[in-house]
Image (cartoon, rainbow, N blue to C red):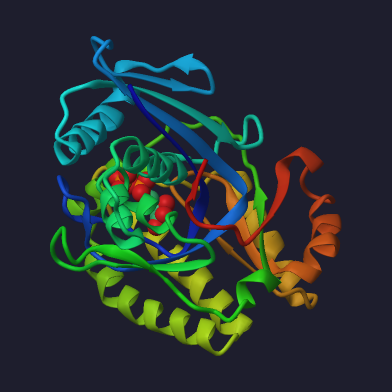
Length: 324
Ligand code: DP6
């Protein structure tokens, strides 16, 4: 029996990953840039044993369905190949996300699984190798190997597509993200399906690709210069461009719900009153607000006029992969 356990934190993209050039290897169409956060994380233990007769996956103690298992089993197959073993595995993952938050956890979940497999099978991967490995489980997972800011350099092959930490001289510690949880029930389009439909059918996808490289460069410049306004404006504009592509897809779709728009407008209003705050959204209705840590208490007070306290969660910059 061989066992490994790892913890990784969720990251939120400031410049989004949206579209795959290679579905199998998860090579993206564009580079992306993220901030790893401290508030949400996954702890994953993997056990490989000759005694198991199948792979199994438990999330927060509950055995998962075949559909959920698919991504995990594909990833375990990659790990087995690298570790030269045919043993089945048991994956036990805990997601430390406030209940009912409905926040995607594939980034932290798959990054933690990559770290746990590395330990269990003694694969001795470097952080770059781990980032490449995690990428093949879920694209955004490659950025969660690192703390603070990370850039996923798209590359054009398995070898050249991985995330690198972006040195910000500690500036990330002055920043924060406030999550507005919008729990409206609506039919989900997973990020995986949504981005594929967009790449294949959206009349706006070319515009996205034209814009995103410049957004990455601007965001990197903003980080290097510790220019919050520039980083915030670039983040907000990039997220809006990503979401615009979904409206041009066939069939069209959107991740926005009426309350997402309420939250976005609230952010604009608060900005007009002097707060440093900008929003972004991912493949769901929640709105994430990039701000400065020292403004978080006052911002939360303001947001409570529109949203219930349970809908508001704040996070600061978090660490990279930890072996447990
Ligand atoms: C909108 O990493 O979940 O959150 O690679 O198919 O597993 P797969 O997709 P995933 O997509 C994340 C998309 C996003 C933007 C981002 O995190 O960059």
